[in-house]
Amino acid sequence: MDPLSHATLPAGIRARRIEGINGLTMHMLEAGEAGRPVLLLLHGFPELAYSWRRVMLPLAEAGYHVIAPDQRGYGRTTGWSDAYDTDLRDFSLFTLIRDQLSLLKALGIAKVHAVIGHDFGSPVAAHCALVRPDVFRRVALMSAPFAGPPALGTALRAPARDIAADLAALPRPRKHYHWYYATRPANGDLMASPQGLPDFIRAYYHHKSGDWAGNDVHPLAGWTASELAKLPTYYVMDAQETMPQTVAHEMPSAEQVAACEWLTEAELAVYAMEYGRTGFQGGLNWYRTRFTGTNAEMEAFAGKRIDVPATFIGGARDWGVQQAPGALAKMEAEATADWRGTHLVPGAGHWVQQERPAETVALLLDFLRG
Image (cartoon, rainbow, N blue to C red; front, side, top):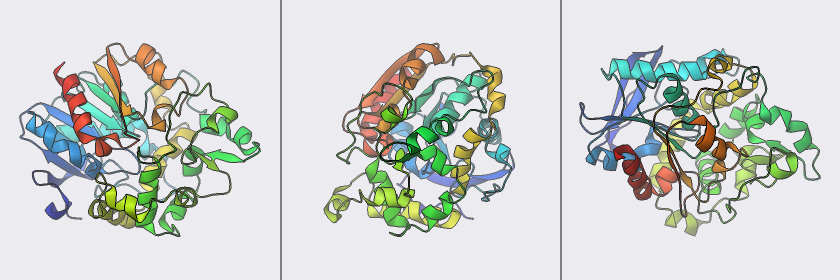
C-alpha cells in the first residue's frame, strides 16, 4: 500500500508510511519542518488524515510541524482486522493512545505542543492528554465534548443501549446511531449503499454540515427518548432505516453540490476511494467498544481532570456539540483544570475544520500561542 499520492494532496502536504507502530504500518500526512513544535491531528468517523487537508498548511506556515495519521481502522494504515468477529481490545482507548505514543517515538518526538482531535478523534485526544500530560502538552477538542473518564463501575453501561427500548417505543420509533453502528449489518449496509458509495458519503457529510437547513442547534433537557428524538435522524435514526436510507432523504441537489467549496467532487472521490477499499468496519469497531466494556481500564482515571490547557472548537450548527446533554458544561467545569474557552464557529456544522478552515486555524493559533 503506497502513501496517498501527491496528486490528491494540496502542495506542501507530504504522505508516508511508517512500520512498527504498535503492530501497525501507519500512514500519515505532514506539513512543516521537523524540529518545530509538533501538532498531532486526530480524525474521527467517517474521516481520514485527509480530513485535515485544509488546515495543515496554514498551521505549518505559522511555525508548526503538523502530523495527521490515518488512525487504526482507517485509510492506508494497515495491520488491523476489518472483521466484525475480532478482538475489540485492538480498538480500545488504551490501544489508540499507545498508537499515538508509538508513532511519536518512531518519529523521535518526545512531546507535542498540542494534540487536536475531531469527532471520535476528540475523546482519543482527550484521553491522550488525561493519561500522558507530559507528552501531550495542550489539547484542543473539536465537535465532540469530553465529559471526563468513566466513573467507577460504569464502563459496562452503554447509554445508547439504556435508551434503546424507550426510543423504539416512541410513536415514531427511533434508534440511536451508536447502537446501529455497533450492529453486525452496519458495515454491509454502508458498503452496499443503494445510491452508491460516493453519493452516500456526500449525503452524510451534507446532512451533518452547516449547509443543511435543519441543523438549528439548541441544548437538550436530558437523556430521555423524548428529548433525543429532537435530534436529526443522522443521530437518532428512524427505527426501520439504515444509515444510507437515512441520509438519502437529504441528498443535496446538483446545484448545492456544485456550490460546495469545502468538499469538491475531487475531494469526495478520495473518501470514496479509501472507504471503497477498506470498508467502514475498522471505524465501526470503535463504536462497538462502548457496548462491551472494552474501555473499562479507563475507570482507573475516574475523577481525574485534564490538567493541561484545553479548549473546544465546534460549529454553531453542529448537533454533535449538544447530542450528549450536559457534556459541554461538564467538560468546561469538571473534566478540565485549565479551561481556555469554548468557540462555536458561525455557519459551520459538524465538519468545522473542512467547512470553515480559516476560522478554525485562527482559533487554534490563539489557543496555541496563549
